[in-house]
Length: 294
Image (cartoon, rainbow, N blue to C red; front, side, top):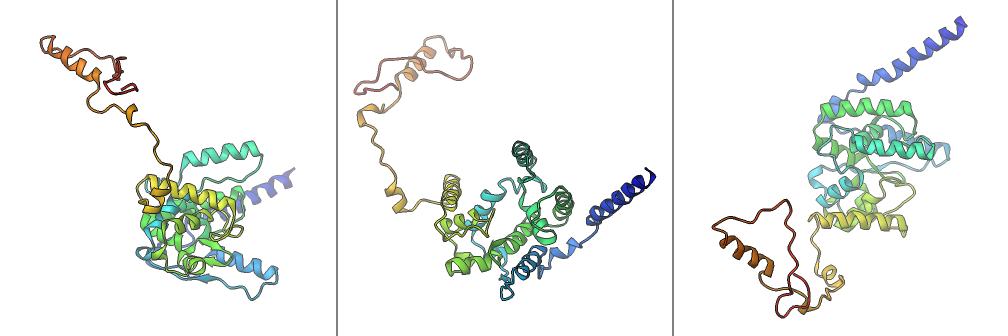
């Protein structure tokens, strides 16, 4: 019994030491003005290729400044991966709560709900394996990154180290690989497709025929358009379903109930009719020349 207790204490100390070191190591301060040459995620991929006998496979990456990345791509990535990026301090607690609920229902540890800051911590220093210990390490590193780096720098690092395909890291290489252009020239639709594959860039391609990519990118693009990030061009406007509302069903001019209220207010010695909340227009006959209600 004593031996079991000793083994337990030793294992506990090893666990604390393994996790606790991430409060001090690695030196995230260097990331303020230094671009990482190779990330833990890249090393993980290289080891994977070696095990599979793909010794000719190499990491493809081209670093670019955030100012040379299309705003379309930045907005699409934020919508897809972390819509609250500018507001949170590294963790989206609502997203984490929803992810935990899904994990409990599925009886699997998938986690999810990771912010861009968390994904950056994982890509830089950890591995893609999913387990509670790695998530603790990721949380510590995320906290340190958020304390040390600006949001802009975190975003710049993320788009440059994120995986966009088999061996393709960084948006500079991804834009050239898939579309043959610089990341500054990415259109909204191209950006939406690139953002759509981030959850699984090995399985999906932005230029493929996957229904998942098509649907997810369409949703991202629709949100960008709704928020005014993208302005519809002539072809899109002309392709919309035309408005078939009959002309004589539209009331033109001031509705009768507003005229009635104005007259009533003048006839009560300047007293405005009392209201108990949101105004609900009374039912009145339709205006002359109209077949619909105001």
